Image 1 (cartoon, rainbow, N blue to C red):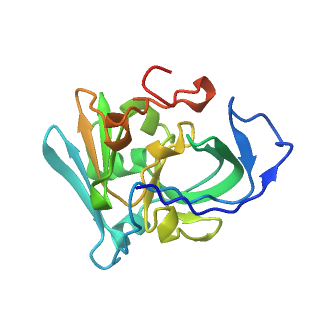
Image 2: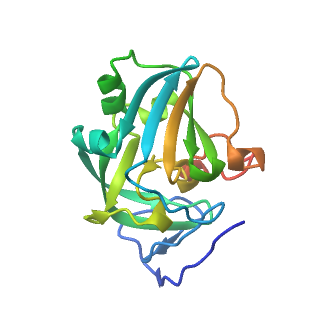
Image 3: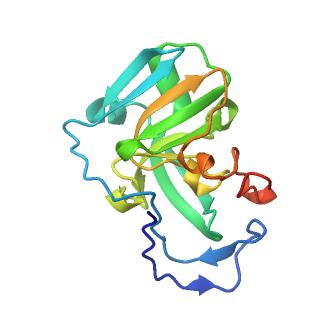
Length: 200
């Protein structure tokens, strides 16, 4: 099920190039694979697993106690809209791995979310500050419809890879498709190469 509720106006001229096939969006469209969950911060947690073992778990307080990172970036949806100059705050995946005291994994990572949504990403695409768990958007707590309390953000890939309502990161030796990838979306999803679907 796609929740498609947006009424943004298209801006005719982007301030800098957007990926091919994209148009510029002033609003922030809401697109989800299911209903928006209501998450209780008192019971929310996030876990990281490597090689089948849980190596770290954080609740809301411990996540926010970690060093925080601000990022100013453009985002690109596979449905062909792009939004420029977005501002987020959260914790890098590098910070989480360091806090867990583990060596940097290799291979792939599967994001797991409330409601069973998953998406897969190569590990290098979430390291060196390229992947964050964000809880703040535009200086406000991240709204539930946009993935709050916490979503994954990997802005250099199409936005379906930035999984909403994240609860786990599972590092794997072998790649495996997530939710939309099983339905024919591209396993990687580079907007500059228009990798929307399997054979793109």
